[in-house]
Image (cartoon, rainbow, N blue to C red; front, side):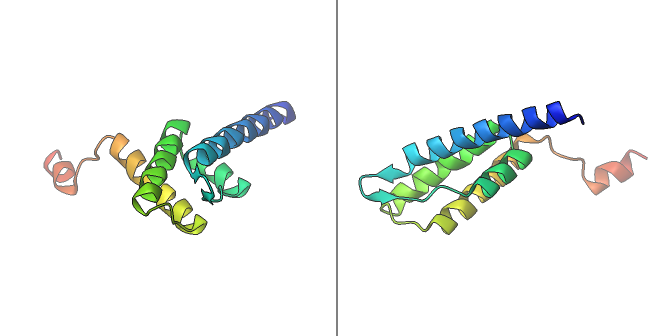
Amino acid sequence: MTAEKLIEQTERRNKDADAIRKLWMSLLSAGSATVEPPSTVQLHLWLRLFSLDVITYGVHEVAKKWARMNYNMDANHAVRHASACMHSFKKSLMPPRPSYLENVRSL
């Protein structure tokens, strides 16, 4: 990978991380109650693992849970819940893999 492509990729990830942070703050702040946004490292990790659609889904799910918990949620809990939602949503989007029996029967 050339230096230009690496710089371009880093700039794009930084912009995406800022967009996710803004979405987080818009959904997870109500008056004096706010949930601290994830660290930049966590946002970049999510961007390596998931598409923006999947990350957006996870942030929206955290906002729903935050409301159900009467706007009282620890930032660490919020990040863990968002990650779990993202993993399960990504898994639901993937086509099912053939089972062991289906593979054996096809032989």
